[in-house]
Length: 187
Image 1 (tube, rainbow, N blue to C red):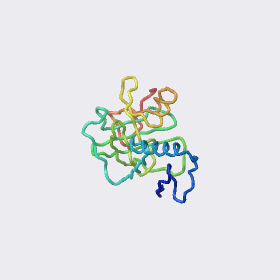
Image 2: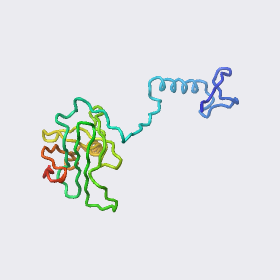
Image 3: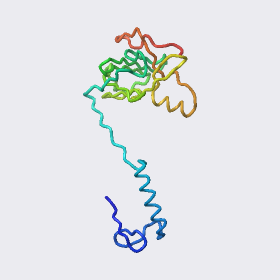
Image 4: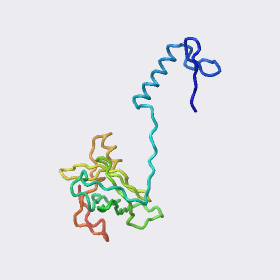
């Protein structure tokens, strides 16, 4: 719904002739209008489009990933209470395994399948079920490239700590039948 204003004397007035709630100062009204115009022109006053996810179509796969040797398996370091494993394929799809010491009663059948794509240096995952995280960042830990989940990246930004128990490490001898057999001990 757009507001329409007409010029009346030396100031702007809304239809019906009543004054704005900001006061009757013409200078104030013009200042507000100029500020709104400046924000609109500079791009600060805009709406963000909603992204529609389509789980049926694989994402486009970049020729060069931000992590050399990215294709393959990545597994969470050895954490007693949970496990995450993902295997990325060259066609933009991945398989995902998860376990936890918390039993919700709605146990899924693993692996879950989904699609992946790089958005700049951020790995974005799309799947029909909830995942440990859907945004992952390349992260160097003790000289080794890992995947850092978005939530742990935010924690690190707040408190400066590293979260090695949230990192996925590259696993070369991965076995789909035992996805957690090669977890990193004591990362």
